[in-house]
Image 1 (cartoon, rainbow, N blue to C red):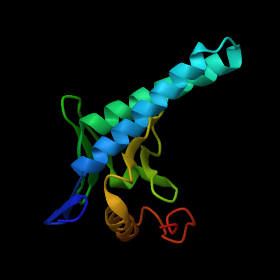
Image 2 (cartoon, rainbow, N blue to C red):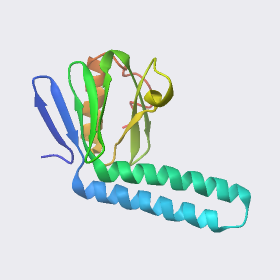
Image 3 (cartoon, rainbow, N blue to C red):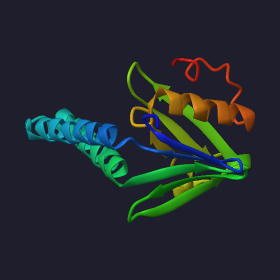
Length: 158
């Protein structure tokens, strides 16, 4: 199999993280938490606020990396499942997708178009643990489902 496990059954795609890359991602987020705590220990209010934000973001990303189970893209929904934390689903007709991609890593964001409040918080999928082949397959699926055009610069930066 490839880095990420991809299964296709009756127009259902399943993406799971590679365990080795999951551990590396979790260690990177743990380092982010430690650096944020280091910033918080300095006696300046700007570094306290910045460090606090880094710690909160690091904890959220660390928990997501550790408990992520899989992403399922079906004909009508995209569903993200976690171990012990349940699952969250968005209809493809109401889906807005974006990506922030760097050289080795990045994040794909899935969010609902017309909801407000906590339902507007995006589902995030780290690119590093699924690899570039998983990223390109997700990009191809989103183009087929007409969620993205495919000519956006950030989606072509692979």
